Image 1 (cartoon, rainbow, N blue to C red):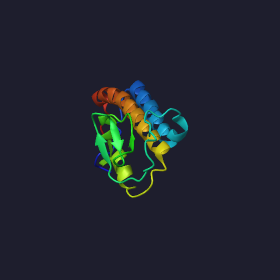
Image 2: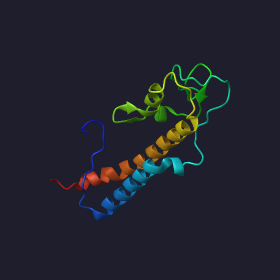
Image 3: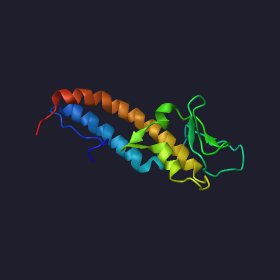
Length: 141
């Protein structure tokens, strides 16, 4: 738990504490029920061929696609999304790597994951703005 997981500082400024708590709650709520929240995923899985087997996972940063084999891919995956890590894991890559050899029958879920990571980054950026202010007023234990 000491590597690459968030730590929560306590601030003496109540308004900052309240703001970061609300953002943290939004982030937590979102992660616990994002399947129900995401109606319009930012990524698509075009029907180009019938080969849905996850063979070799790779990323094309020019076209911003995540390929699962030579023919099939997910669109609109920015380098920031592809390279997003939690707890030392590159989430989008790891998820597909664990499923190599299987048929891609969870493409809707993967598109939701991509969108969830985009929303997470957006919320994290807001939290980071407040976090810098909190560091100025940290309560030392």
